[in-house]
Amino acid sequence: MDLRQLRYFVAVAEEGSITAAARGLHMTQPPLSLAISDLERDLGVTLFHRLPRGVALTEAGEHLMVAARQLLGDATRTQGAMRAMGAGLSGELRIGAEPIGLWSLVSAQVQRFLGEHQDVSVSLVDAPPGRLLDLVTRGEVDLAVIPSAEPDVLSTALTQSLQAAVSVEVPLELVVPRSWTSVGPGPVALSSLLDHPWVLPMRIPGLRILPEALDEVFARAGRRPARVIEASTPHTGLSLVTGGLAVSVLGAGVAEQLSALATVEVEGGLPSLFLVVLWRRDAPLSPVARRFLSSVLG
Image (tube, rainbow, N blue to C red):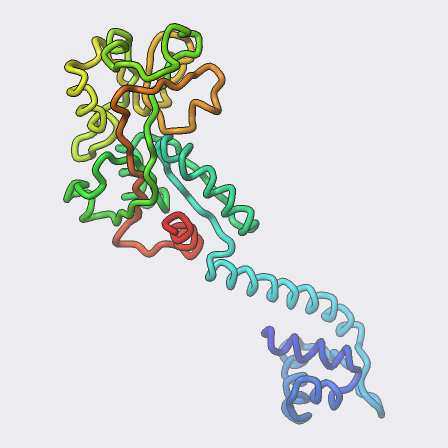
């Protein structure tokens, strides 16, 4: 028994006539009659009473009619789901992002994407860049988003296994506890803040990220912070900033969403980071991941 036979069976049952069903199926009567006979032989039951004018379902035929409609409906829905997956309209999307990328790019992109693709499920991994490289290399996420101070000089080891594309530029902002009323609001000399503890992410060999982006800023100020508290990401140590202990550097716009933080304009300004999207070279992206990547890269 196959789906073609079931479609023929349902058509004959609904028409009450093999001749009428054949017309609706755009085929001649003999092959349709043969298909119904083959189905009855395969199942070992009589499905239709043959009448002088048309056919009528037997008890076995009535039972098969209920099951056939359910099976054909399931098949139609499954076919539609497979086509949607093939077009990137449904399926699972796995994204890894360092918090700057999560706050500055991924969250808004995912919100828009889910609004347009309601049958897509999304899983997000918030991790430091080194961990994200491992995850995307092993195929545990489809795409990874990391910040880079110089995306054009990513290490050779990275580009051998992964493809990379720059998505957006993210300006950086210096953030301090809002309780520090003595700081700002006008431009302040960076040197005036270097005696406070700074929360900064760890350096990662082969990747030029936030610490490297700030090296030139500290060189311009003539010295580095007296004390640096290293964290896996800038956001990991935010509680130290909101608690009034330290300062840090975040992507533009983050502080606006956290009432305990204030931004400080720095004389000479701060550099920007670029958000780089990474995916594996040796494995094709799923249709839904490919569609999301296209929307992120514009």
